[in-house]
Length: 308
Ligand code: CP
Image (cartoon, rainbow, N blue to C red; front, side, top):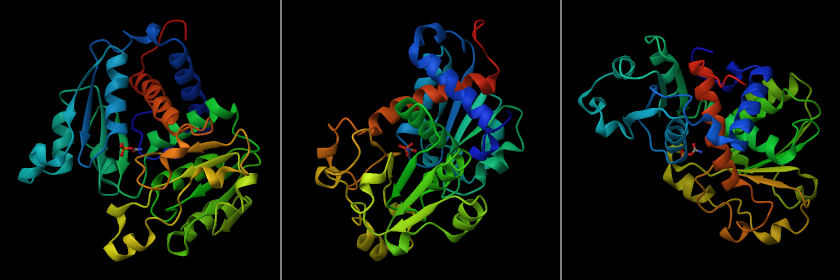
């Protein structure tokens, strides 16, 4: 694995291996605390982030490695007009692996072509966010123990939500997974996903306008934020932003072992009154994200514990 740009760059077997390693690290973190000694990770974030950047940095530090980087384009020479490719090529001389986020779709792919160290796409505009998909899969595996035979509800911004698109593609590779799409008309899943994934693979899916009508069927409820930064028109954002708000009343008929996920950050779409419900998995998801990134860094650097 040289670079990771699109979650579908990973085979099902590679994902299984990463989840297995991530789970081992989670169970026995101390054993891995020196495996990346003398290795450095650069986090190049041209767009804001809390979880992705800091979990990458925590992951590398907990593996015994070092971190360097910047958290906004304004604090790098991008501000002076330097190209993304030149910035990444420069930083590749100072580190062993790069995690990069950029608002422009395709920027990490272009940057990866000029460097000899592995690059991980940490989110490129509305395109891909492969380590979020790995985080989501790790969460489903930890909470459910399997990927097959699940009914997955996805709610909110299904049009611009890169995490939704990637998770649909990743989950579509498992047996007997059913999808339920819950969104306002304007934020429906793009037609190309319906055609390329659901229709091509003959996967069952339904589209509904309320979460209450499907709540009893769901094994996973994946909530998403309506993303202000993806709208061209603020009026549309204001009209749609509070379309779906999950609260305890809407969970009355949900399964006892429903797993409620959200890539975070949330704005209003999950009431804080849901946070103490044992079915709320979104902060566990944050934690799993660090362990799967530890597994990914180790795998991409080719480092191992002798016993693994
Ligand atoms: N889920 C996620 O990508 O969060 P951040 O934008 O805070 O990194």
